[in-house]
Amino acid sequence: FNNPFAAGTVQLWYRPTGTVTWFLAPSTDVTTGTVSFADNGTQRQWIYNLTWNPPAATPVSALGAPQNLSPANAATINVDVMVVGVNGNGDGVATPIQVITLTNP
Picture (tube, rainbow, N blue to C red):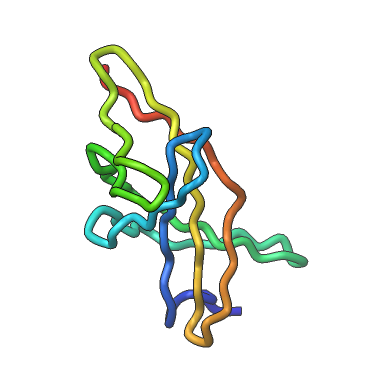
């Protein structure tokens, strides 16, 4: 079957690990690379390669002030991310939450 999100959208959502508010990464901060699939004859898995340029801080939310996303020198900050795909009919599916580490070498 065809790419389920070809006529829809793929969104990246993030939050600092340990917090509750999710933020939608603006499309200007996310670049979609290649889209491929793995098919074993029973299941087809779609693979999306994304590049994210995180902001220096989270936006202001109803739950509080912005949180820093710029690690100090030789430090790291963990961020939870998930990707939500929505097809042309409005049906959506989300990936499991993944923890990524932002690093300042």
